[in-house]
Length: 184
Image (cartoon, rainbow, N blue to C red; front, side, top):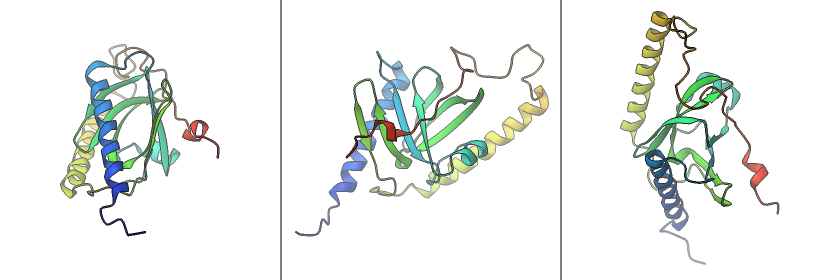
């Protein structure tokens, strides 16, 4: 057999990541239709992934998030998506490059994609990594300023400091995709 110089495997993975991006963009615009919901597994050590140190400590290699009822601020970028989730009642913002995604599963229709996260047609642009790091520093500064001006408990306005919206403080769920994989 001849050597695959065109690297069809990489081209197909990039195309499927593009499909995930389009799916998330549609959900960001219109919300989740019907019973659709997503399990997204990603490599927490991949370049460009931005999660809190608390989550990095808890999920040092891989993490699976669920986008169903309790997420907010789903923003779709060219190279990554950002979403707000609550973990144990603590709101978190996650930035996940599409190249870090290892699996995408919609159990409502039994649709699943599995990726090899280090194989992409293009490496994440260096200027994106710098922009992500700069954004993270700015967010940390803003969070520190907010904590010093409003206090750790969310301030004196009677709120707990958690995001507003339906059920935002009930917690996120991290699950293993192994439960959904076919046994061979």
